[in-house]
Image (cartoon, rainbow, N blue to C red; front, side, top):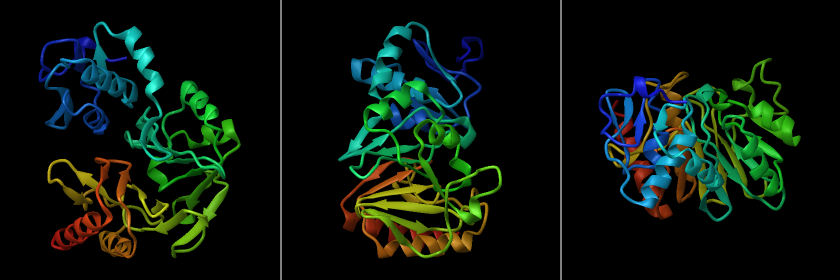
Length: 289
């Protein structure tokens, strides 16, 4: 639980606050952008919610926070009701799971409800309530792990549902015990509508998942920046090879998609032509770094 005594001075007075344990993962700012902002490496409450929608979004952020750094003085009962918002619907049969894990530095994770078996993309923290929600949607067949950083509690979910985890061999080690290892560097359809594209750079075995030529689950490879209002990537958090990451970004120009759903950074939806142009501009800009 957040500690009111450790609340950041930057918070405006009121019900909600952020304390000093915040790791600046951006989850709260995505869920409640009219309540939370960023300053000096922390999120903070810059405006207390004034209506029911913003209060609900702030409570969703409180529940999703990986470090339990968000507190509220008088909304515990409401928070329990808001739990039922998760998984949050994005579009079609795609959902955002919430309940971020500090084991993956607060990375986002997602859920696809598919007739041939449901998928989890990267892992949230293990949460019994979330397990029940997934069970009501038909369980879980596959857990696609974009890379080694965002595994979090995937093993617990795999055990809970008898699901198979998918990870590239270059990002696997003896501690992961992954059921399905991706062995090569070319893109391939794992099943109909699910295209796995190896995108080395951030890590050697990083992969993205393209679903129905519409939803790109991009892990830590590509995201939308709220600051620059553009697609982007970061050389500072590229752990394997920036040169390879740029090559991998260029590889994505071969595909069309309208959603970018990252582990970190903002989710975004644009027509595929607009998205393709945004990717071209991002590559041009990033090549000069």
